[in-house]
Image (cartoon, rainbow, N blue to C red; front, side, top):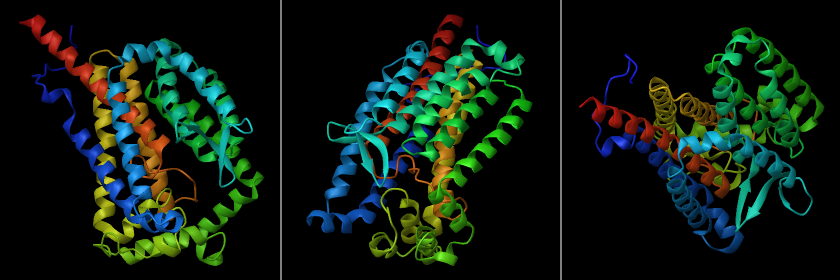
Length: 388
């Protein structure tokens, strides 16, 4: 039976797809593709006298990601729930494999990628998705324990500490923070006690400060973030160039393709600092539209989670919440880094930054969100038939 608070929905074929969500997703993909094209044309010329090198590859990444998403849509949420523990083991194995010399691909001093059929798969992105599935399953299986025990967070976080240690070996502190935020956010929404989070946040802040202090390059990033202009040619170079890009963009931008910072000054313009290129070329208007699209994605994910919770599908609801936290927090960090609100960290802008592995994993993750919405509508549809 439906809960008293849940109202039957009139179900049509169109209602099986969350229209605001799909518009937001395709808009982000389209804007991202345009900005990657604009930010990478000169790189293609420099590498092989081919202006279409990066745009063509990014278009292939999007197409493969969408095809992959269609396949993921066919997998029921019950299957994900049953396979969560096995997926977590696979995630740990992937983190171990990427550290094996000769197998993991090293870029800019970090070994974070596996090469598969010509695509570089960033293992941490796969582990983020697996983390959402595993934590949702754990809370669903141990819901009473999570709500009543003062130690409910310790077991899953102790397992995640293994993954975090392996990620730090790559090194990839940014992904460690994202995964911990996902886990803690989902546990909080799952009913864990508030006082646990206070202690854990304090502990996390202490550990994070220690890890930053331990590595000179991390300490330099934090120091330069506080005053990037103090050493604008070295440690503050990325941030100062990003801020100049936003300054040049003003309200309406200098025009698509007309940005200068991407050409000679802004490192990783088509990946980590794509948002700065967008700010320069599309201005405040483009920035606000992009933030609005991510806000729509975040909000719709929570609405879908709430709908799943109303029909008693706790696992699906938690997965939707977890995906919202992941995409929302990662987008916030990337934008914050670009605008000088946060220290420099190498996290991609979801659905927009250049990269095959990241694009495929994120498209597949969103397909799970669409699957949850589909199953909710199917539930209402079947119960409406029973009532008639």
